[in-house]
Length: 339
Image 1: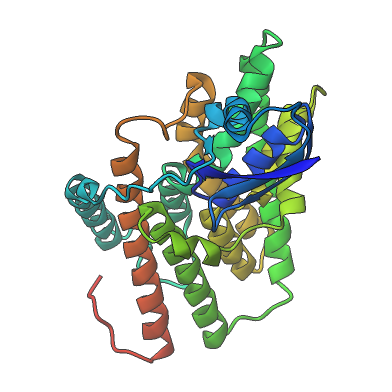
Image 2: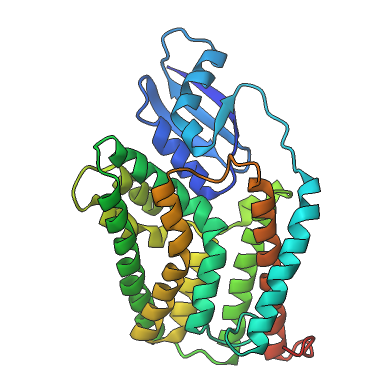
């Protein structure tokens, strides 16, 4: 048994680590796999029958290329593609202006407020579905789709997956809300809540820009042993596997989901927490459904860079508004906006 370390092109989030490890661990000759997001590397221990490192890298790439990853012996220079901001920035400004108009109309409270209304939860779900949810849950959706295409049935498993996801978010969101009833949040509690959500969103927004790779090490993630079960469920052959996989997405390392879970906790009520998470999941449904039945990801498309940089700019802006609002509520700074 020998250990080989390969550089991975295409890694962008904690879900990538799980997908790479799960796809490679059962390859013939592989004894163990450990992926490292911060270094964009994967260490593989195994016996490959005398193949050299380039041949091993090419062989292993065949098992992960459908998820957008390429293994190589040499480190590939990461192109930050700063020119994409010329297209992403105007689109992001237009979207942010739309959010502000919705705020002025009283339809959402993205910029102010100690709680998330249902319209706001839905809108955040839409934003999440074209950013981190697409990256995190999207890999699982494509894996589930590929698994059942081989069995000749693609539609029903996907329907059960999304149904399980909606049911799971409702039930587990309710449990979090009920748990929050044990806490009485005062001004300090809501300050901490808004500040925490803002920081989580800020980190994931910066990561979406794909310019400051070092920021990835600061993103909160669900413990790997929990997230791994969701990916394992997507590959199971049991009739209830798609439903279980859908429920398990509640625990995947998506920063938006984690932020909404914090808000659900702050509701202190089963029904409020349940509806917050359910409507958020409904917001993510259209894009994930397109991915489910379209059968292809976005990471290898020509517009992927502009797409994610736009989402990143929007998320960073909303995160900063959230942090500033927390400071205003606490009385640390005076109101800066009249939204």
